[in-house]
Length: 390
Ligand SMILES: [Fe+2]
Image (cartoon, rainbow, N blue to C red; front, side, top):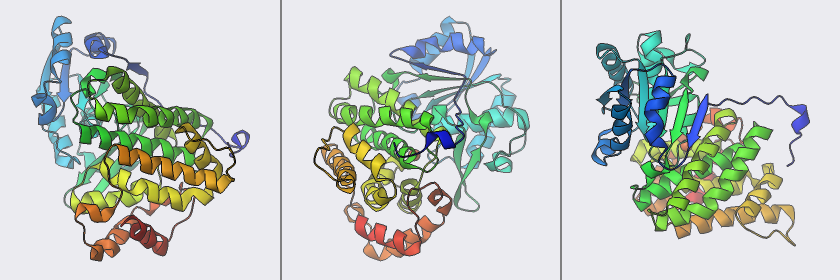
């Protein structure tokens, strides 16, 4: 570690309680009661309902005599209206606890509904950092992917349809009372979803690890997440029913979420966003595409941390100078992407080269994420990273 941990203040945010383990979904009724819930609003999307992932949760709630109502109106990259509508349902149904079940979009909507249940108004009223006056209604979050880490972070991302932009609500009141991470809920993910969401978790761990905001807490969590994902993502991708690999991926995604929930992201997420908004590619896939190219650009800014990533991914650093060892981390990521059949070439996704300036302009709009990035970027740098990635 090349950061001087003695010279900085360490801050760490986390949900009150985190329960991780196979079949932990069966404990949900007990957790609902512990946090004072008697009528639950399950916030989810139609895909989760169709995959029958609500069944183990509903069965726990029924056997615990807890009432529930399902709101399955969540859409990908959730528009603010989805959250506003969910808050209306919460009120009209007389619910007292929000239970988010799904990928990042469902969990983020649950956070927004919990906030609106107490603070009133529309979710767009609360965008920005620390704009929420009061803690929301009790909330439990249950991920059905191993990627976003949203179950343990204090941020929610939504789409402002009028402005056609992404917006964030950043507040400690977006932290859940409990996160229940049951790897059984992730077993039905197809290989491409396993790959994309798993790479999102890898990007969370790596970006936080090399960030100027890294702390001793985020380092410990990120290191473990990187090693677990490197070892288990190919197995979970190849054999979705491998419960050991699924357990390790669920654990890793939660650890990576805890790391970035208190550390921060960087240029990979910044340059991935325009690919998502322009071409409607998944968040995880766009991050996976940009990761090796941004790592190669960034590595002079924190070579020791990049070299350590190579080591965590199983590379032998013996005989390599520091910058060469850092390059091994990039190669390890490229090999991992090859294994799980994810191309990191923009041109492979049918995007014309003439679109690169548009992407660069979109990337520059996320410049707030350049601040914690280990190497400074200007518009020329952003252009050349996209060219490299093409
Ligand atoms: Fe992400």
